[in-house]
Image (cartoon, rainbow, N blue to C red; front, side, top):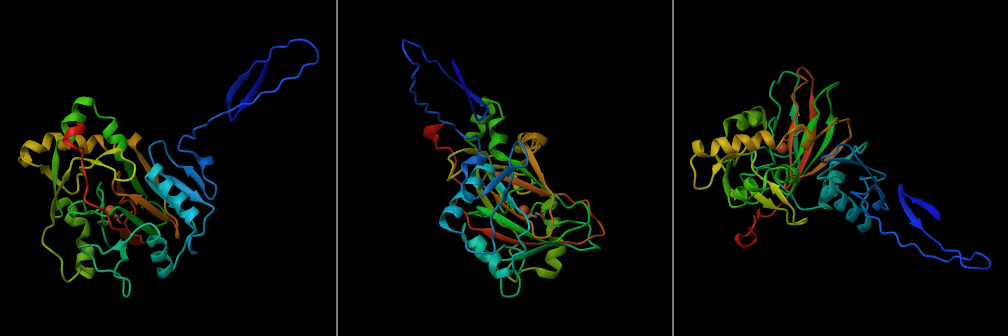
Length: 324
Ligand SMILES: O=C(O)CCC(=O)C(=O)O
Ligand SMILES: [Fe+2]
């Protein structure tokens, strides 16, 4: 008996001795599925930071144009891990735009003006004297639009000496950890999303003072499936969020509230999340179709400045009636 240990998995090969000199010829075919696999990448190194989602990507210089192979690997890692983090990438604005354009089409943010000469890059900042942080509530970005952005990327320019981390939560897992009965119920529901929920509008108030666009609307409203089928992975993700969802379609706010509140608490349970600590030059790149985020507001008295680009998305599709 020969025992071979392959990547920690034992493979047993038994040879029967007949007569004469021992000659054994054998072939071992081992198919290994790398589970969200670090070794499955040839050009980048992918290190998970938590069980639910999130991975740091190393071995790549984002200041230069990426080859098609590297872009493909980053996209695969992104679809696997929902949010990717890059360290030490202090890109100037043209390089940051070029990085983002390799993954999608940058779009403007509906409320805040972009930077001079770069309308599709906005500054996310909290100043020393401010108390409220931009987007400081669990959400996926601007789901009140008919075609909410596929992705968002942030590049850290100034970070506080402590705090100011961003939390992320996996909405595939949020859906998958519901009971089959509730999953079936949600599969058939649509939700209504508004840009005007009070807890959310206050998180953009400071920026509306100094950087509001001239064409801001009072309210954006959209309807989307409560469970969205991811257009690239085909997986189902819970799509309601506390920042923008107001009710289920065909129901009042009062009727919707108990179930929505259950889902808001469920979808951000600690084991569904990861937490990223920023350094100057860190980049996060997340998938709004299957992940939510929430920046932690725990650094009063210090500045935090990020540059943000969002990438265009499609109209969310749900589970077809036939598939339910
Ligand atoms: O500041 C952050 O970490 C995230 C802010 C936010 O919600 C966003 O940029 O979409
Ligand atoms: Fe956001």
